[in-house]
Length: 71
Image (cartoon, rainbow, N blue to C red; front, side):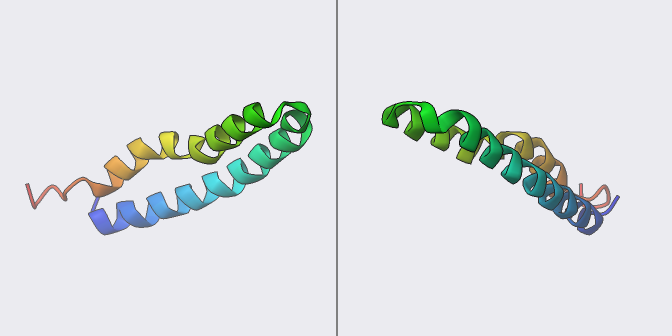
């Protein structure tokens, strides 16, 4: 598979993931985090804000692989 095709597929997957993760994180924050102390809220918002990046690393690595004919 060409890198250009992998990038297209990866971009669509990333957008779909973020569109699902965003509302899920907001719902979790709205239902659970509001009752927590301010320091805990801050840490949890940071974790929720950055947690979507971790599952994207393998996808980005896959997207950036060189084409078989380039190696």
